[in-house]
Every structure is written in C-alpha cells, then in structure tokens.
Amino acid sequence: MKIKFLFFLLISVVGFSQNKKINEEYDYINNYYQFVYQARYEYLNKNYQKAYDLLKIAEKNCPLLNQMGIYEPTILAACAVKLGKQKEALNYIEFTLKEFGTKFSYIENDSVFHELKTYKRWKKIKNNAEKYFKNYSNKVDFQLRKELNFMSIEDQRVRVDGFDAEGAKIVDSVNNEKLKKIVANCDCYPNYSINLVGNYDVDEFDPEISVLVMHINSERAEYWKPIFLDLIRRGRAPASIYGDLIDSNLRINGVFDYGIYQNVGPDRINDYENLDKRRIAVGLPTRAYQDFVYEYWQREYRKYKKQNGN
Image (cartoon, rainbow, N blue to C red; front, side, top):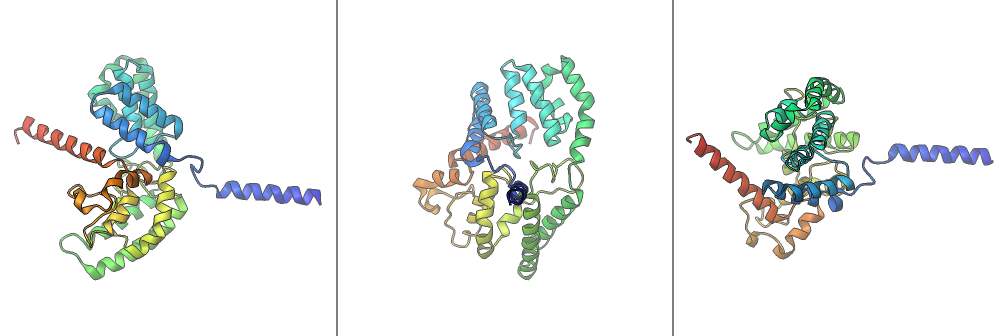
C-alpha cells in the first residue's frame, strides 16, 4: 500500500510540474512593468543612474523582457556605458544577442556603444555574433511564423482599400480559432520577446499580430480577458493587449476605459480620475507616460525632418 501511494504521489508531482505555466512564480504587472516604464522615462531624459537603478529592480523581480520599443537589455547596456560600467554593458550586449536574437549591427551602429569597440570582449562578441544568432534562430518555430504572418495578412486584406464586412466576419472567426490553439500551445500571446516566435530579423515572415486584438468582438473578448490578463502578469504577452481588447470594443460608443487612443481626451474616458489605477492594474503605463513618449518621438521626428531639409 505504501509503495502504491508513493507511486501515485510521484505521478501527481510529475503531472503537476508538466502542467505548470511558464513564469507562474512571477508577477510582471506588480513587480516589473512600472519600473521599466519609469526607467525608460528617465533614460529618455538622460537620467541614466535613475534609469539603471529602476531597471535593476525590475530585473531582480522578474526575468528581463525585450519589449518592442523599449528593449530593456539594450537600455541597461547603454546606461552601464554612461555610468562607466563597461564590463556590465558588454554582459548585457552579449545577453541580448544570445537571448533575444538582437542583431549585432544594431549595437555596433549605435553611437552609445562606440567606446566599447577597443575592448577585447567587444571583438570576441562580434566574432561570435553570427553563432549567437544561429543558435537563437534554432529555437524558432518557422511554421508558426508563417501562420502568424498569414493571419495578419488576412486580417488586413478585408480592411485595407475598403472594409469588407462579410469577409471580416469570416477572417476574424477563423483567426480567433487559430489564436486559441496557438496561445494554448505556446502559453503566450505571440510577440517578438518569445523565442519560439522569433524577432523581426529571423526571416521575411513578420509574426507581429498585435493588431488582431483590435478586431476581437465583445462576445469573443469575454473568453480572452482572463487569458490575456494572466499572460501579461507572467510576461508572456505584450502588456498593451488587455487595454487594446477592451477599448477597441468601446469605439462604438466613443467612451473608453483605458485611454489607449492618443486623440481621446478626459471627457471621453470613463471615471477619468481612476484611469491610471485601471491602466496599471492591467500592465499599461500611466497616461502621462503614454503622452510623454508620444510627444518625445514627435519632437524627434520634427528634428529629423529639419536636419534632413524636409
């Protein structure tokens, strides 16, 4: 009897470990995203020590992500250079090449890292960069990338050059069922930070499908809401998708819950006084941060046009 019980216990433990979700022990919503958003704000304002300190807190709390538009390891490397921590900067550069398939050319062409080119470690990393990218690419599911790319193309086919309402119903239904299977299989919402999906540079099939969230109707949204929130909490989905899901379904009445649209003022946001509380609770940054980043890149774009005579 004792042997049978121990055998049953072993099977139960093995079964439990196999069903355990990825990153189940981490809470990115409460312990990661806000530190990263604040760090990026400080970095763009050239407050490198503050940015570095905040990112180190985020890294201590949860494994680093490589969120599109933020690129945490690269910012950490840049801050380390600014703070005279060249060895640490090289560690983060090598890490992002290995873990996220970052192309070495992006690092090499960034003026922030030019002073590292005299280091032997830099040359070693450069010599190994192709191998690192090949090893990264070996983790990628290329059939999945093709499928994601096709889903995105189909989504846009019925919306570009005029909206095909009947076609959209069919495409959205098919994509929704495909997405259910994909999310269940990879325990993620596919994005560049997930090695199985791969980044933009792996091949010609761009796997970016965040736009699909905007076309999930209110009925289907009820299925996805708890799933998206759980994935965001575990760092397994873009932090924006829950807010995108909700507000995209509120376009019909023009009053929103999460303020994801840049041209929407306080008068068109429900319970505006508590907007940031709602945003933070689902992994979004504050509205002030969203506005700051938008305005920052608007200024940079105007500066670029002026410098290039446009």
